[in-house]
Length: 426
Image (tube, rainbow, N blue to C red; front, top):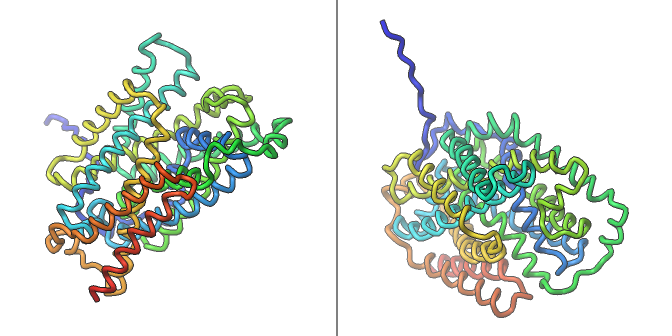
């Protein structure tokens, strides 16, 4: 009798609610997950944008304040996923309508493909710095393809395998060690106190800097329920997410600013490489950097399934990875600051709509699970209008009066419009 070998594909959770028996992640799991997603080379690069416009102490305070505000928004967005077991784009159906949810879905897929490209790009640059130009002009493309293949494999495995098997056992410990090592090296520099006391040159308005920090956790909220739907409790998902992201985002934004200020080199990878055992620390961060790319690819696939639920997830994973890799080989990292502000402009007001509508729905007894599926409206124009008005305000402020900051006013305007509409309706 011939021996048959069978390879069972990992389970896929698309747009349907996660069964209760698979909602097994605890608060500590989410602390590890979101502290890992809150660190990385691109976060260090974002932190480096705060200086020399701000002084280093100002950069720390902005990083802390922005991380608290943004992480509170992020964790609040995950409440629907933790409570109902649905992914983020599906959680928008009762609020925007099924057809209405297609617009943020398309925008989210675009930003996630962009993030995938930026992650592959920065990982390739780091690997080239560590190992040299092994293949000459083809080295960058080689590393992009290597990391793309690895991250696609993680995405096909899914969140439970990723968190329990890869992140908690391997990757998170490497990045914690390397981050501590880099921090100690930077702040043991003989002229660090002189740098800390140095004021900024004023070229970056304080509240625009706050927008740049808030943009990072905001970039994750369209993904959050793709992972927090596996939470065993609503409280655990919220607390673990909030604390994990505040710690990581504050730390790495400030560390990015400190690296370029103390080392005197604007390039983050070169700054790390100059430290004692810097290449080893860079290698450890590089290992963990794959988790960000995994999340971008996986959530892009899940988001597409909100529009096309019958397409198999693994096929979408491969397609998203291929497009992201192609972009990583062809686009410059110089567009990064603009990319962060674009994400903030599109998704901060939408989060205001989501949080406000969810709050009022909870006062009325909450959503039924059918509200996400067969009983969801086709489109809710009032919520779409509140979102668009908030987006317009964000970009008006950024382009014409950035010194007042755009994140909080646009969030408040969209949320306030929903509150007024609901009060008049009741």
